[in-house]
Image (cartoon, rainbow, N blue to C red; front, side, top):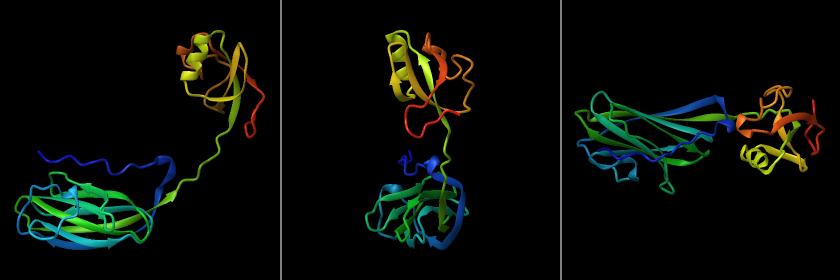
Length: 216
């Protein structure tokens, strides 16, 4: 059984735009005379036998992407930080091609490691590039303060469980919460508040009670 890869890449969608900047690619041909059963992503290994390494310096902050391809057989690829040995990304598919991706900082020195796992292919091609990810502009979302009737403790607990942003007003029979404008119409009870709220209903659009929140 092939060793499972750790989760090495998590994309934070709100922080990254889909558009990407230019990429700088570096290519290298590698060869190995024998195969290995050791996991390529387990750590940087001394080159020789089944393992070959190349060095790469990220020209910009962004997403480093390494592809490995061979005509036959099974090769794996892993990318490590050269100074700390931290695993940046790895690919270990049982196929003739693999992909490793991970986030890097400008000037970060990397070790790209190719490992021959099985098959007759003694040669493989590496291609490494750094893709600049443009920050996504965060658009301001209009908000309004909405008064929700909460006639009993059960209704208050159900409202609290929804995780809504509370405003600065509450009394024995209602609680003000902040909701985005345009999500639903306020004229229909329960349209914003799930049916599990029971007796709690959207009552009216109340005046804003905290700075920066207005009523359209």
